[in-house]
Image (cartoon, rainbow, N blue to C red; front, side, top):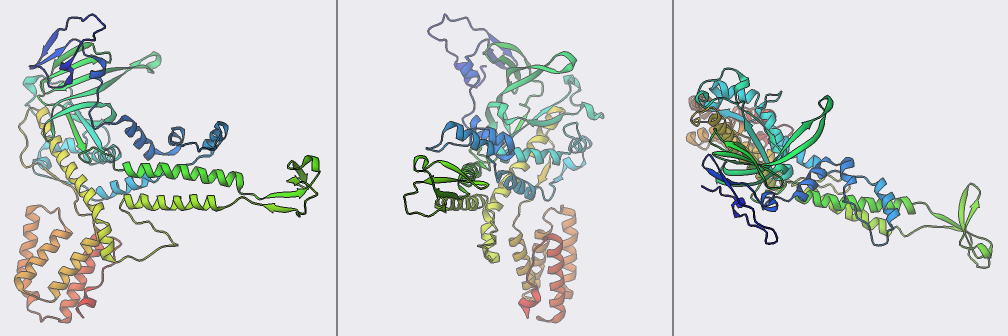
Length: 521
C-alpha cells in the first residue's frame, strides 16, 4: 500500500518534461523514486522554526541573544548610532529562571516506578542507564522535560545494536545489546502522523551525518530526509531523490513525543515576548543615560562662535551670544522620557511574573498576602505542573512499551510511573491543619479514621499498596486509644499539635502552619 503522508501527492512541474516514477516496495509500503523538494521538506503545521530559535535564544541569553535581530531602531536613530547602542546592549534574562524554577518543582521529588518496571532485570538496567552514558532515566527525563517546556514539544529516539530477528525474544544479559534512548532534536523532526496516543503511523525527520576529514575532524555534514513507518525505513536526499530503504524489524516507529499542550506552544512563549520588549526598553534607557545624564554648562562667548564648544578649566561648555542677559548655568534634558521608560520596565517585569504565575517581591510595594490568596495564585502553576507530570507519566509508559517491543516481548503489564501531582504547599498545609483540627474535636470514630487515612494520602502519596495497608491497619488499631479521651482534652491537643508540626516540618519545608492548639483553645 502507499504510505499515508503527503509525498504520494507528487505532481510534475508543467515547465519540465516528466520523468518516470518508480515505486519501491519496502515492507508493506510503497515509496516513490522522486518527491518534490518543497513537499518532502514540508513541516508539521504546529512547527514554526523562527519560534524555536527565538525561544532557545531567549532561554540561553548572553551574546547569542544580543547578536540576534531582537533589538530595534527607533524612528530618529541613525544606523551608526544603532550599531553603538547594540554594542552596549544587555539582556536581563527572565526566561531562564522561570523555566528552571518550574523544572525544579516538577522534579523536586523523584518519580516512582512501580510494577514490572521495578522488578524486571533488563528494565532496571535501562532505568539505571538508558542512554549508555552516565545518566539515569530520571536524569534523561529531566532534560527531556526541560526541552518540552522550552519548545512546547520534545522527542526521544530509541535504537539498539543489530540483533537477528530470531534472537529478539531472548534475554540479553549484556547491557550493550539492550535498546538505548537519547534526546532527539525537536527542530529536526519535520512531520508525523499519529496512529493512537503514543504511537505513530510514520515520522519524517532530518538526518545529519558528520563526514570525517583529516585527523578525524568533521569536514562536512551530510543531510538527508528519513521516513520511518511501522514496517519500513526510507532515505531521500534533500532534493527529493530516493537513496535507500530497508524493513523496520521492530514493527513500531522508534520515537516517543511529549507535547506541552495541544498547540505545542512553548511554556515561555508569552514571557519571551515581554522579555524582548524589556530588552529594548532597557537599551533605550541606557541610551538616555549614556547621552543625557550629565548636565551641560552654557556660558557667554564670542558672538561669532556662539553655540560652539569651548574649553572651561578642565571641562567644556557651550557658548551663547554675550549680548544676551543670561548668566552662565548648567542645563539638563527633560528626565520625563527616562521616567516613562522606567515605568514601562517595571510593568513589564510585573507582567512576566504574572504570566509565570509567580509573585514579584518589590520592597517598595510589598504587601502581605493571605494564605488563601497565595493558594489561589498558585492554582494555575499547579495546573501547568500537574499537566506536565501527567504527560511525562504517559511518556514513560510509551517508553517501556517500545523498550519491550525492541526486545521482542509482549507489553509489560502493570508498568506505572508516578510523578508528583500536588505542588501547592499552601494547599497541603491548609488541608493538614483542617484534618488535625477536626480530629482534635473528636467528631466521630469513623470520621477520625477517614481523616487520618486522608492525612497519610496527602503526606505520602506514593506509598505502594502493601505499605499503605500496614499504615491503615495501625490507624484502625490505634483509633480506640485516642477516641477514649474527652474532646478538648489537653493530651489530645498536644498529640495533634505534635503530629501537625512533625508532618509539616518533614513534608512542607519552610512553611509555617498555625499551631492547632491555638485553633482548639
